[in-house]
Length: 153
Image 1 (cartoon, rainbow, N blue to C red):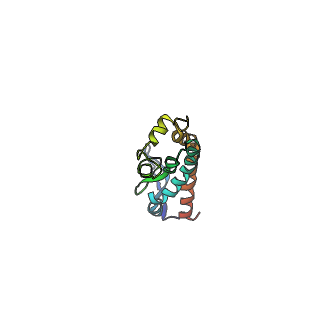
Image 2 (image 1 turned 90 degrees about the horizontal axis):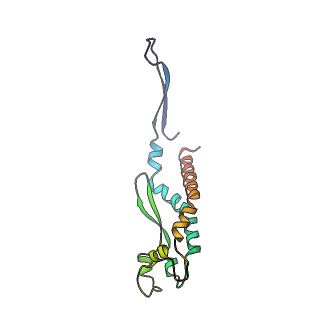
Image 3 (image 1 turned 90 degrees about the vertical axis):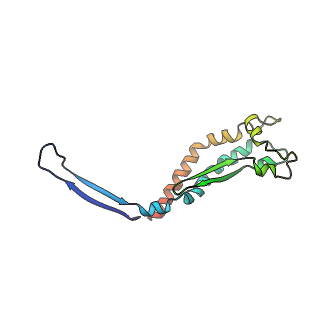
């Protein structure tokens, strides 16, 4: 299974003060190491962040729609055995949106201060933390399924 080699051994001695026992050895996991990659984890992580993004959008103020449309899940970094994925708003998507007449990134102002209508303050932070338990569950379940597919359990 998944290039796992299991062997057994023993450590016997009739001399007092030396260990006596049976051992199991595991070597390999090469298939898991080769296939549980950062690239394989990205879709699982994106899926885990989607409920938080949807919740944040419910609290975000909408005037022109430019800032809410800039809210995305973006892959920041893919490593050999891990990845970083971010839920974010603003930046170049907002600055270059034709509906944003000021051509400024005002998403941080909304997140930290709210809008004149009183909406938006902490929308992304609150959504992230309120969905954190489910995010973790989604990631754990997704990685478990990935490993099960690899090992054909």
